[in-house]
Length: 160
Image 1 (cartoon, rainbow, N blue to C red):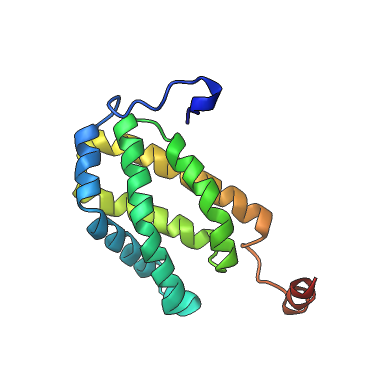
Image 2: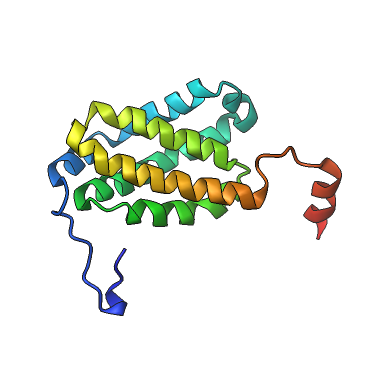
């Protein structure tokens, strides 16, 4: 994403599909709810592991997800979604939401956006979601989400 203080031009929101982005923004609540439902359907244990509070956090964040995805579709550039994915990792770590759950949510977006976008309009959306998934998988590797946490080490590091 370009930055004005670096002298780079701003992101051109007419380079891609601005009408499709407007349709996405108009149905933000529906897309976000369907994406979360799809993620929970794909992994039924997600509802038990996260609980109602963390699922509500994810549902609240879907509005921003949809806006970033719409920006990517309008500009035909996956950079805003990649940057957004980098920024949401720390808050979700604090909430103890694993990166695998965020990958499932991104895949849920891939499925739910199909109801609003046409085949040509899905190409930039899929590229943006792939960029976000790549970020989540990289952070998953660093934080060790693939392994079950050791309760003793977790207790020791929690106090430090």
